[in-house]
Length: 72
Image (tube, rainbow, N blue to C red; front, side, top):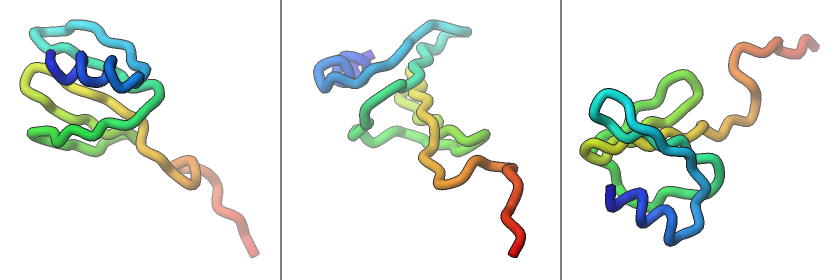
């Protein structure tokens, strides 16, 4: 859980909870500088794995996925 302490020191806002032996932290505001063991992109989010801690952050997009496209 050192990654969570590091995020707190940097002022990153997150909500954390435990589920099935994992600590899951949803990043509300701020950046994660640490290099994760594994990264998965799914459902408009980035899941960063740090051992038994998973950080979840919304992926930055320029347009909402699945939205209507403009016709010329």
